[in-house]
Image (cartoon, rainbow, N blue to C red; front, side):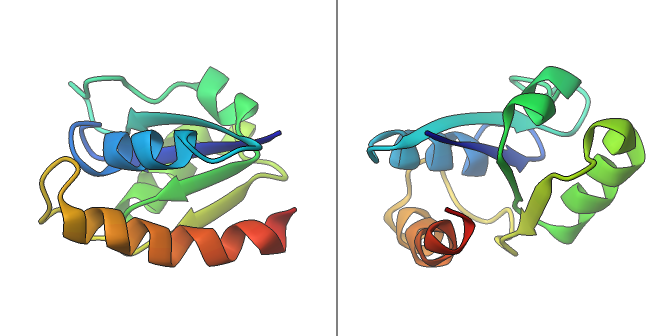
Length: 110
């Protein structure tokens, strides 16, 4: 099993969409969280330790991750997907973009 963690700002639109999409794939365990205060599901060190790969939606998320969770990031793969906060939850364009960006990377991490 490969464990994927998707992180966005508030855990309302992008990362929960990614969690739903990739939870359907065999061989993957998936979770999501938000990096900002007040996120639906706030990111914690436990989720980072659990994950094999951490996908962040924007470069600013990677910076906050490094700033706030540095002790837990050793030997963790962090991938920035460069997906802006302009999509609705489960919007078809977002689903398509997530699949296009994430699926090719999964084979390189196995």
